[in-house]
Image (cartoon, rainbow, N blue to C red; front, side, top):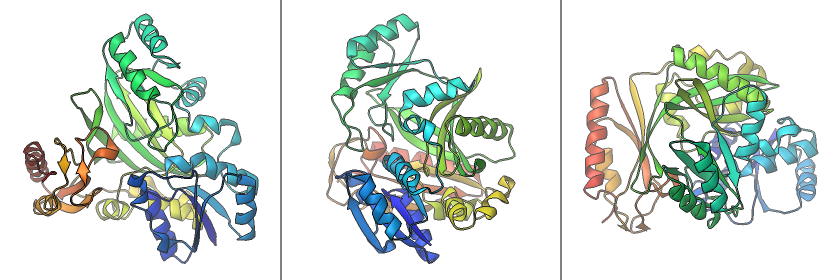
Amino acid sequence: MTIAIVDGYSTGATLARRLHAQGVDCIHLQSQPVINDHFQRSFNAHHYTCDLKYTADLRTVANQLASMGVSRVTAGAESGVTTAEILSLKLGLPTNTPGHLAARRDKALMAQAVRSAGLATPRASVASTPATAAAWFTASGLAEAVVKPLASAGTDHVRFCRTAQQVEAACVSVLDAKTIFGRSNHTALIQERLIGTEYYINTVSHNGHHRVAEIWQYTKQANATSTPVYDYEEPLAPSTHEASILRHFTFAVLDALGIRATPAHTEVILTARGPVLIETGARLGGATVPDIVERYSGGISQTALAATAMLNPQDLLNFDENQVAWNGTLRHVEFVNHYQGPANAAALGRVAELSSAVAVFSSVDPGDNIPPTSDLLSSPGHVYLAAKQRDVVERDYARLRSWEREGLHTA
């Protein structure tokens, strides 16, 4: 079996490793000429039989893949979703429905498709000028709004706003910037800021049948510029009432977006009026370490299920979501750096000494000049804390945050 992975970065790099270990020939290709250094760090060429790099003409790429006997094309990261689906359609391979191809990347089209299916999304508008964005916010009567790019990820240029002036400034920031995938922003999305608990639901689909691999509860903090910064996530047991609500809502969202044959990462806020969609990516959830997830979930992760769906789809269909049994308290904590300066080579070792630290990861090299954390890409790394007793994790988490305020990550 030969599988092509478009943009095999982040969790997609782990998928390539899993498939390679199971004797699958993997082909890599890029969706664009230049890849962000943050994503390039995770790429491992040894897990591929060849790397086709970037070719603008997808018809040429499709012919190459056909000659190599490729039987599946999948996205390794958000940036690869559209390219992977177009190639799959050209080759007649399993993929999602073509009708909502654009809506699986464009957040405004996504919300429109989901609302048309009778599901809740935030009140929103798309603006091509800062003045238009500010005027919509004033007319909306909303107390708060969120301004973000239409097609990015990782809280890239996301900002919470309380006034028309803040909305205007946030829109300027979006329009003047490129996304983390290197694309220019021609418009900005202004959304109602929702109040409630935020979750992400990682699923895998085959022939329109969906299975939940993981549900995690987000905790985020707002920094001095009103940008949401990832704090930590904890898994939600599938037997809970909240999990049942999220599962049914997410499956309806996947159907509305035509997601039938890929992994998906869906972000939902449970509000007083019920579940409301933030966004869905038709790909693996990023910034996770499946090996650690499986250690504490009874051997289940979205990456493992995605590999199963490609190699033996019937095993996915037979999967019982109640098999996911979380052991003790697990917390995935993103590092938050507070000071500009060279990355401290001793930081990881100090974090690793925490009694509940089971895996520590850096996204910077010692001596790199690192900025204060403002989004996922500017976090200097992350750690998984795990213990039988919740108070042990709470204690170590508090200690880590205290060290960070003292300058842990910079020399």
